[in-house]
Length: 484
Ligand code: NAD
Ligand code: 6OD
Image 1 (cartoon, rainbow, N blue to C red):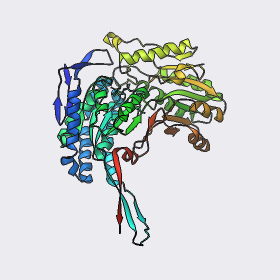
Image 2: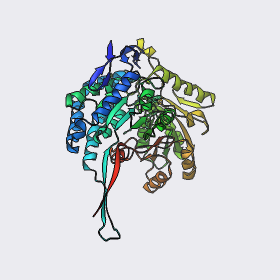
Image 3: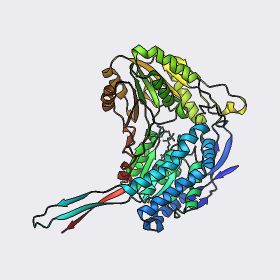
Image 4: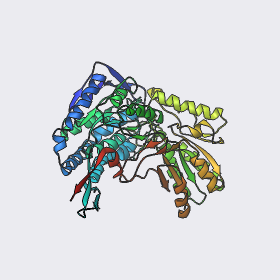
C-alpha cells in the first residue's frame, strides 16, 4: 500500500495516525496518508519560520526566480509521475490532467518568478518648505510564513497557483492539501529537494479541517498570512481563525456562475463552450457554469444541442483514450450531488438528460459516478438555481431582454465568473460591465492569462491574485522617505 507522508523541513515525515485515501473510480483504498497533528504542524511552521532567515532570504530576486524556473522544469521532467498521482487521486481523464493540471502546475512557478523579477515599485518627489525636498520610494518584502489551504478539484494547479507567487515573493509556505488529494503536494517536496530549494521553504501537512491539520495550521500564530481556496462556509471559518492575530487572508471561494447566450451568438461555439463549462472535470470547476440563460428564439434548439452534447460524453476510466468524463471526487460528494438531482425533480424540474447514476461494470459500480444532467422548467428560486452543486449539471432557462437577464444573472450571493455568448461586441462590452463577478468571458470560458486579476466578488472571494495583483497579498509594501 502506498504511504503518503508530510513534508517538513525537507524531510518526509510519517505519523502513527493515518487516514485512507480511496479511489473515486471504485472506492478501493489506494494509499495511507500520515495525518499531521499539532506536533507536526508546529514543526512545519517552525521550519518555515526558520527558513525565512536562512539561505532563502539571502537570494537575489533573480536567483530565486532561477530556482523557481528549475522547479517548473523538474515538474515537467517528472510529468508522468505528477500525471499518475493526480489522476489516481481525482479519477479525472488523463487527457484533461495532461493538458491542464500538470502543465499549469509547472507554469505557475515560471510566470510568477518572471512577474516578481520585472515588477517596478513607485517613486515620488515631495516638495518641502525648506526647498530641499524629499524622495519617497517603495520596497516590497515577504509577508513571512504563508499557510496555503487547498481544495481537491484541481489539486496541483490550485496549490501552485498560490505556492508559485508566495515563493517568488520570498515567503515560505506550509501547504494543507485537501484530504481527498494528498499526492501531488507531497511529490512536489521531492522536486523542491532535487532543485535545491532550501529546507523549510516548502512544507506540507496532511489532514482534515476542524480538529485536524487545517485548524491547527490556520490558528497557528506563527503563520503570518493565510491563502485559501474552497467552499465559502470553510472560508468564513478560516477568516474567524485569521482574526486572532489580525492575519491577512486571500479567499477564493464558491460560485454559481451564469452563462448568458444571446440569439445572435455563434451557435456552435456557444454550445461547445457551454458544454465544456458545465461538464469539464465532471462539473467540479469553481468557474463552471451551473445556470444557463438562453434568449427565447434559440432556446429549444440550444437545449436540444446541449442534450445531444451531454449524451455524447464518454464516461469512463482515466486511461481510456475516449473518456471525456470521470467520476466525482468521493462517495460523500456523489451523495451531495445526487441529493440535488433529487431536489430538482421534487421542485418540478423537467429532466432533459441524466439525473441518476450511470451503469458501470465490475468494481467501477462502487465508484463516485453520476450522469451529466440538464434541467429546464424551474424558477430562479429553486435550490439548483441558487446553491452551488459542484457537479456535472446545469439548469437552462429562457430570457426575453438584456435587462431581464442581467438582473437574473446578478441575483445571487456569489460573484465568481460569467460567460456571455454574442456576436454583437457592443452588447458583449455592455453586459460584461454590468455583471457582478470577478471574471467575465465573452465568447469563451476558462481562457486564462496568468498576468490578469483572478478572484470573486460577494461571497465568492476576498482579494485578487494573478500577475502583479498577487504581490498585494504576498508582499509587504514599505515606503521609505529620504529628506534631501
Ligand atoms: P472545502 O472548503 O471543503 O475544503 C478546502 C480545504 O479546506 C481542504 O483542504 C479542507 O481540509 C480545508 N478545511 C476544511 N475546513 C477547515 C477549517 N475549519 N479550517 C481549516 N481548513 C479547513 O472545499 P473543497 O470541497 O475541497 O472544494 C470545493 C469548493 O472549493 C467549492 O465550493 C468550489 O467552488 C471551491 N473552489 C473555489 C475556487 C476559486 O478559485 N474561487 C477554486 C476551486 C474550488
Ligand atoms: O486558473 C486559475 O488560476 C484558477 N485559480 C482556476 C480556478 C479554478 C477553480 O476550480
